[in-house]
Length: 162
Length: 360
Image 1 (tube, one colour):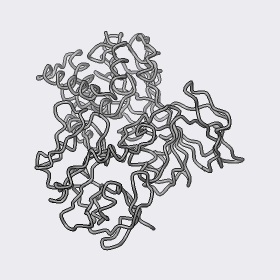
Image 2 (image 1 turned 45 degrees about the vertical axis):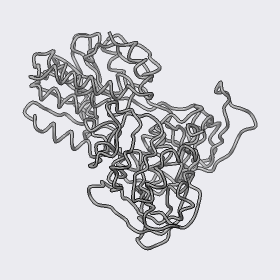
Image 3 (image 1 turned 60 degrees about the vertical axis):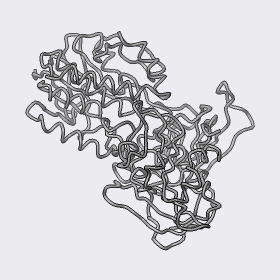
Image 4 (image 1 turned 90 degrees about the vertical axis):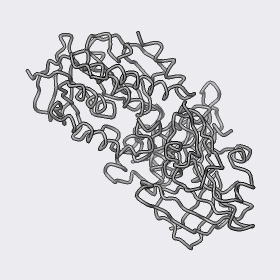
């Protein structure tokens, strides 16, 4: 179905997530790259040697979760905007999620915005904690939001009401 | 008659890279571009490129032109650029004719030519497809990203290849609603990362659908779409009517090959390369000696491959006319390796199958 709709199944998504133990230790990248394409800037961008594509640039990237610091550089460098960072170390009932977001207006820190799933359906309201848009991110801002843990595997996008 | 050593026709990604490569090898290069500015389609490509670092991956297309022009400037004593100039003829005796600014017509006799004219958009036949509001996806991208003009309010995108997906995303960035993306094929043709990022904005992607007809008095008001069976026949009773004031046709590109046909080099229709392309050797030289090609004209692919082809053709064309680069062998090997990397995965399978039929 994914190849008809562009919506990955929950099984596909869960396979890309690291273990709950790892998520609860601190921020870590989730690379939702499901199909082989010739592309490796995630590997090139990572300063911690945490993403490996390998010799053949068509390989699916693999995350070394021990090396990953959740710095989010790769989020802004992935041309497919396929990467997010999940952090379960801050609270028992919430996770922090960093996503790339290339739309205006940008959300405001401290405000609530609508949290959406991978089909663009409304899930829950989420709180915007940080909006990072440095020059090095080259016009792909990274937004940190606080999401209810029960939506951890479903949340993927936000909608900012104008 | 104007003298020239190496003429490059077209200054898109392939042409600019061919110029850099040839000029850095020591050849005197004359670039002929029909538009007033250089860069071809890069000027409207606001998205980040795929590929690897060598093909400027993760850099936005709009910024790649400047990178290439900065590189070209290093060799400026070897480079002459003619803009607003269209090559209108290529003849058996090797003479090229050029129309400059619609009023000056002149001839050039170069030692070698690299044709990098790219590709043009295919169209789709359905009733009322000439209503205002029905555009090629490239035109919509030009309106938005080059001229800052909003093409309309509600867009139906026809075609879920990379261009259809990318232009849909850019329409949403410009604040335009995309009603749906449809594609006749049973699967999404473009990269699925592009599809996913549009889908999570709430835009449905309908595979196995086509446009049955467009409706509107003075301009597009509605589009009737319907399902297709596995033989691409419309299934009666599956019609749906969508409100849309813009329809974007993005059903693929085909090589812009008229100049080559005129020159008389051997051409072949290769579906995997999206049209009629020249028979060539590994150096991208056609069956006419010293006539080279690079980019979409030799088979429609991503711009990353077009740039590497440009570097390779520029290197080989310069060598052929007496300007062999010092590290020729290493460079050539590197370009061939890059091309093979870009084409080695599943998305490159059909390209390789096509190339096999034209390389001698």
